[in-house]
Length: 73
Image (cartoon, rainbow, N blue to C red; front, side, top):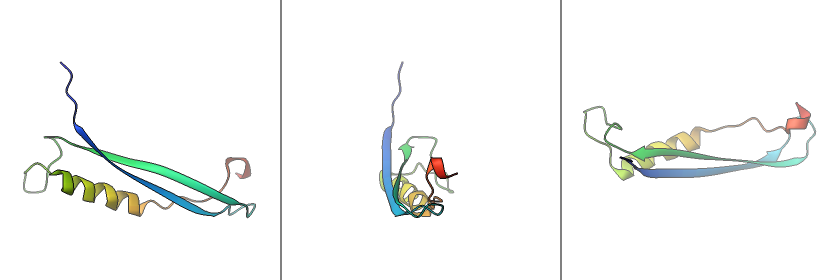
């Protein structure tokens, strides 16, 4: 038996300059959680779609990558 849950996604893209060479670059990342019976609030109730979306957006907004090219390491 396969069980699937609704996936909630948020994508963020950051543009800037490489801290090593100074060339322009872009980094993107997708954050996701699912609406499922194991994803609960502090009071024990199951989180709704909007509550999970808020959590995903908070996590995505906190993402702060260091901008450098792999070849510039």
